[in-house]
Length: 120
Image (cartoon, rainbow, N blue to C red; front, side):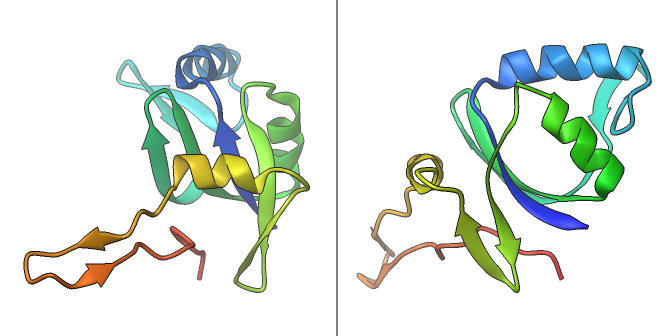
């Protein structure tokens, strides 16, 4: 098993590709009651317009399929609870999950955590 930090640069194209994979009964993609489902173990997904990042826990077969799908990219992995980004890819992550400093109603400043999720 490997925990991948995945980036989808164009959700519409990814969904089109996933529908083709589901019709061809590729593992990880299914149609159920006319709805396309992604049968992968994942923690939170962050969406920004037509892009997303997510964590995917993949076994060897799922990793092989993942590597064949051009519409989704690996930008890093999680090792011992720490995000390790592939060279030059952290900027993608920071753009999708920017973490601005916010102020609550009482004037306290806070910021979302750097990591948006982990597998237990």
